[in-house]
Length: 245
Image (cartoon, rainbow, N blue to C red):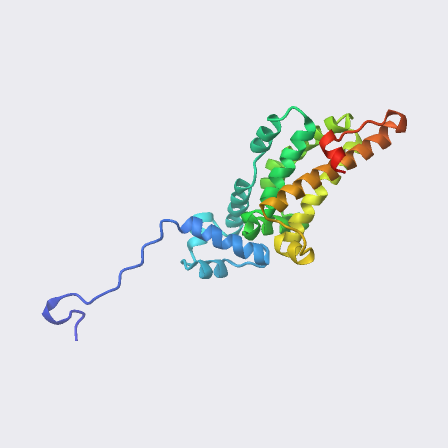
């Protein structure tokens, strides 16, 4: 028996399946899900490739290894979040710093309660906030996080009528950020189970933004008053929010 079939034709050999043109992006999305589920230390390249349905050499070929893949995932996550330029543009649309703060709270709450809540993006960021990796500190915190925090600090200082290097301004920033972090940590599904009365649909989110803004401005007013003294007390809340409180 020879390697040829009857009639002299060569035997059938199945062709190799060509690589998917979207293999890198497909691999990145799959890795994002697994990193979000298990963390970068527990995830393996074999598991990622198996779930993605690609050759086990694909991670090395496209990303240079699991570490490079994780960095690409973090860069992708960073790109899907509101950028520093976007926040700056939103802030620049309003002269009143109180209105700028509300605009930024609106943007943050929209992200935290919107479709992205169900993606791997926020889950990975939550893992990194709890236990930051060197890649996170370099690619997200230093590149985007710190500039955004400086923008917020400048705005808070203006609202409180204090220098931006004043300790009370830093305390005010923490008070403003804390509710957003609770939404991130709680996630939409957990918040809805814990507080079934809450409406995180479009109408409910609008009211939540109003209340979070009023809460933030009221807290900043109290901190500023404590620093400047009762005799120099000055409200930082606009009349609309004061009437609602």
